[in-house]
Amino acid sequence: MKTPLVFSFIKEQKVFLTLLMSLLTFLSVLGLGLVISLSTAITRWNAEWSLMATVQITPGATANSAADSVRKILDGADSGVAARHEISESDAKRILRPWLQDGGVLAQYIPKMTEIKFKDRAGMNAMAEKIKSVPGARFVRHNDAMQRSADIGRRIIFLSVFVLLLVLGAAAACVSYITRNITLIHKRELEILNLIGAHDSFVAAQLMFIIARICATAAIIGFAAGVPALLIISGISAGMKVGMFSQMAIPFFGWVMLFLLAGGIIALSVWTARRTVIDILKEAQ
Image 1 (cartoon, rainbow, N blue to C red):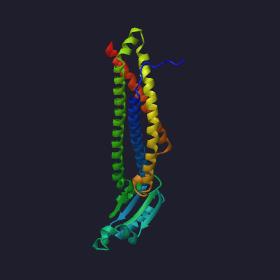
Image 2: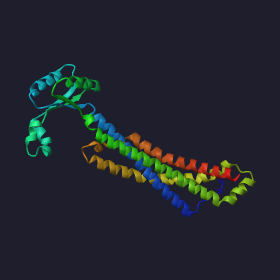
Image 3: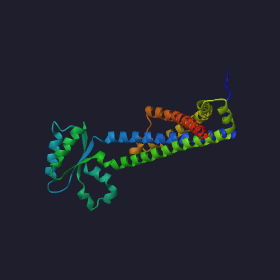
Image 4: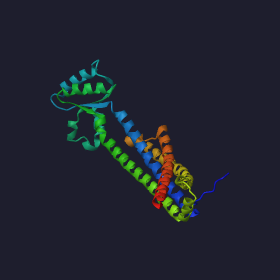
């Protein structure tokens, strides 16, 4: 046997709330998706470069002796080196072409460079200490050189989280406002329910059911619109081919979090509706 609802939304109110919550759900999914994508990019970026370093030997009178010392250290059995690649002078000039102005006077100051990939972080730290003791040699960690890109990514993450919190706050505020309006419109029905001894939980359940149904529809619409937008962003980042932002992606666990976010918005809306109705009923007593 169906129990009729005491409260009801008019069509315009349902359409307005559905569209509004759909938009807020879309923005929430987009914001969290960006947070997950950038977090994945930073993690992959650090993992890719954390075991990479470059040894530079400054040109000068001691360059040859420094190169020999560095070579002996790298050839040591306990060096921890997984792979290494010496950058030739022609390759260095090609890399630095924008700054050399067609082989100008700066070419004589190009250091001899060797790229190294280590087996683990301990081996890298030990090698760094040994290289520091060689006059004219410099040990440059790739991860340190890439920190600026990682810092930019972290700032975007913080901004996305802030926007996400604002959107969730806006969703709760909208549900609270509309629930309060509906409750006040049906003030006469509330008085009748109080006279016949209806519990506050019964009254709250009436609006909670309506809000849950509307927000569930809105969550489906917002999530369905957010997923293609995130896939487009992932496609654009993958097309960059180089740089930290080319590592952006949403893993399976990330999609699960996005789905849970949509469900969380429904739960937040229902909880907000309940708290709003209960507070109004307490004020009326």
